[in-house]
Length: 51
Image 1 (cartoon, helix red, strand yellow):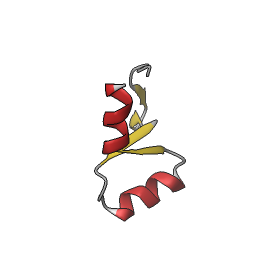
Image 2 (cartoon, rainbow, N blue to C red):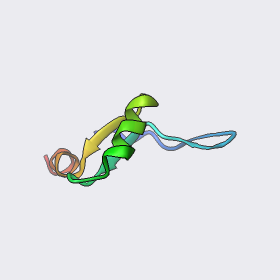
Image 3 (cartoon, rainbow, N blue to C red):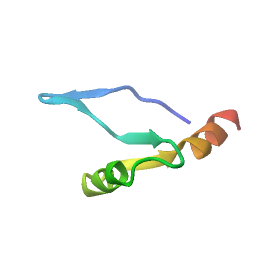
Image 4 (spheres, helix red, strand yellow):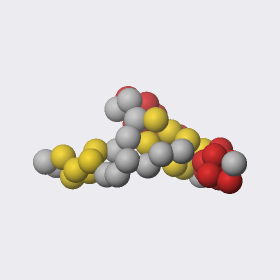
């Protein structure tokens, strides 16, 4: 897995990926989908970095 860095726009940070708890708030995930931001459950993220 490659981490590029944080892209900062004029109104704050541009988010490319949100890592969330497996039982996280559906509102956050729905908003991320609307903004076309990739979401990754924490359990999957942990798998990715441990492999």
